[in-house]
Amino acid sequence: MKKYIWSLIAFVFLVGFASCSSKKKTDSTVRGIAKSGEMSASGRVAAASSEDFSLPAIESKFLDKDEQSTRVYLFVSIYKGRKPVSVEEFREKFNLNYVVYSDYGSRDRLGYGNVILDASNTVRSGDRIVVQFDIKKPSNKDSGVVLSEISESGTMKKSLNDLPVRFTNLRISDQLGIFEGNTENLLSRNYVHTGELVSLKSLKQTSLPVFVSFYDHNFEPASSPMNTSPRSTPRSLKVDSTFQITTGNPFSFNREGLYYFTTDTSKAEGIGILVTNDRYPKMTYPKQLIGPVQYMSTNTEIKNIQNADDPKKALDRYWLSLMNGHQDLAKSVIRSFYTRVEEANRLFTTYKEGWKTDKGMIYIILGNPDKVQRSKDREVWVYNQRGNANNINFTFNKRPNQFVDNHYELVRYVEYQPIWYPIVEAWRTGTIR
Image (cartoon, rainbow, N blue to C red):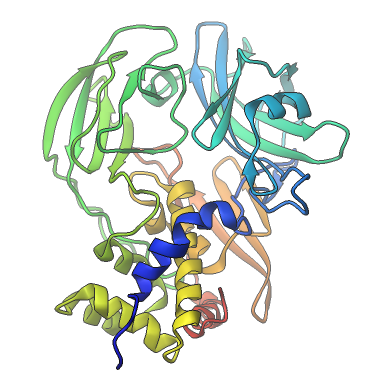
């Protein structure tokens, strides 16, 4: 085999991949809801022209504020053409309304309102716009669902977001949030970088001792959608080290891994945060790049790459052999694949990297669903068509997890085989790119 002028992977990341997240918006994020519990998949889809706004992609979180109110945070990704919309233009061109229902599918309204977007409640944080507003706690309800609608003035374009909220029986994650540095900007992701300054604090400004456990553990990636074998008994995680912090005081982490915050060590209740290298959610280190490839590879192929004297060159050979020696095709497929991996990390990171989660696996191979149906404890991703199959559904059930509130597990079926294998084969032949 002749020598490469450029290593395939290096070429993609040095020349093309750095700009992929801003250049290509076809893999949109999975967000949005309708009152019936049926959601469209809105997100960062490229606008028809540089003058059009894309539909906002919205994520959300709440924190307990005081005895009378709860604060809602909306993390909004919105573009005009390929450029992020400025916070000033967002305030001018968009409106925000909300309704609080007693539960999914219920018409029992607990409150509603229109939020005037201004400098007091709308700021930019990284590549997102953060909007915050307070809702009044109902006197006779323990929980509810906040349905938020962001609409573009003068058009029919709108995006919806649903947020389950607890008003009583609060968890530590309802009372304490991780903020950027010493600011009032709530962190919109479940990961932080080593050396990044953050603070754990309450909106009530109370100062509390917090116990922190560090787990130096490499979690397993998601298993095949067809793997219906009973799950093995979960292994208990070994705590690598512990220390203590005080809420309100900024701090940073110097080791990658999973950190767990709790105010009461006798309860299995806390806040988990994944600490990563400063390139995450991108994956650029050769050892990391091998992991996601297992979703489209045989066990033998993965072992050969891992056991090679130079895994980096082995990974190059793997991609080039799949594409029958066509370097340009290999570069294109590599770029598409790892763009999906980056988006999975950005969207689905929990106590482990996003690409390792069940949602991340489905997203990487099949892309963004055409529709998402969500209820209190379940999400159903609907793909209108993939390959020769129509109306493909993947169901994710919400499961209790001590580290995060948004842990979902895929319901696996052997019947996915005739759907899954042709799509994997499309990746392996370069049809998907």
